[in-house]
Length: 113
Image 1 (cartoon, one colour):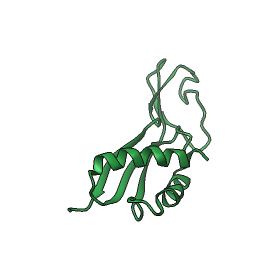
Image 2 (image 1 turned 60 degrees about the horizontal axis):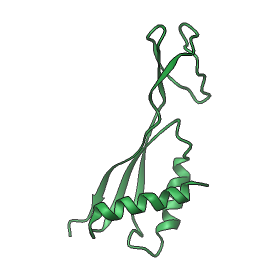
Image 3 (image 1 turned 120 degrees about the vertical axis):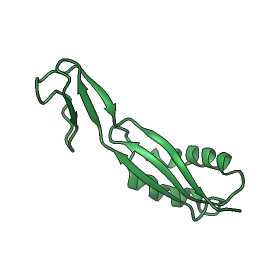
Image 4 (image 1 turned 30 degrees about the vertical axis):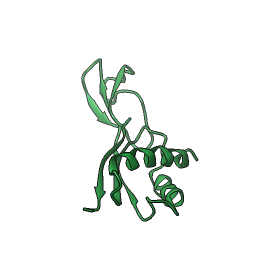
């Protein structure tokens, strides 16, 4: 469960950017191809922040589907639940990942104080 260690890294970044203000929500984007389970990350956040200045804050996850572009024919497709890394049009395997590898803190909701 590496999500717990990711919480430590997220807490460091958030604490620096909050500059002493109360953190309400951390908005995070996670791509489908990242080996991160969003629900586990949210759960670990509550455990990790218990008893800290970040206690009571929450993580809001935006999930980004994986999209591929075929370099042979130019077709663009979204990966399904069972990923197949071959073009649905020409069966080519020279594919470029367009989206799905993201892992970003996109914004913070902070108190006004």
